[in-house]
Image (cartoon, rainbow, N blue to C red; front, side):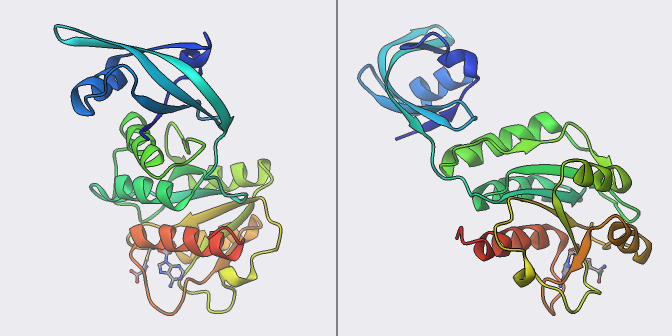
Length: 243
Ligand code: SAH
């Protein structure tokens, strides 16, 4: 069944729902659903609703779809370990790729960071959120991963990690001992820091460690910046028993 994240307001007038705009277009023109068709709507906060379409209207270029909620349940698909990926901005489309794949793997949130050696620039939260939403629908996530409005400087990211009580780890290729195998059991919130194409500087790695964010190795091979966060996320979720 096709799944769509919607604004909670769409689900406020239960049991009736009215879908307009992009989602109505998708249902009628792309999926060609008709009255009687079934879909799942998600509020992005952990509940999913089964909806039967009752009326499909096409007026010229605009579409509207009415439906009726026939069931409601807690959405599955969410890991217990909430991981926020603090990923240095990357060149070109690489950051988008990380958002899409990271959502599939099970990341809870993404925060772009600016570091000394960042060459990637330009970040559009609206575009990123769209990519995340589509990936979350396709991969059957129950919650919509969060994306920060704008990039944070490393120092601000470190402050945020501390403030939110997250356990922070910085992936650093010069660390040769500690790995994600050492993740504390029962961990609920993890922040993973990944550098840009040129890596973190020594000073940045020290700065993170001074802020209580320990360095971890991702193994003896150097991964590309856009690969490292995804590997770190998958290993952490595996280690926490989610995969
Ligand atoms: N500066 C390096 C590579 C940077 S890789 C060089 O050019 O040789 C980009 C980022 O991926 C790094 O900042 C780090 O966060 C992560 N990373 C890649 N491979 C890693 C590994 N084997 N161990 C830990 N972190 C790694």
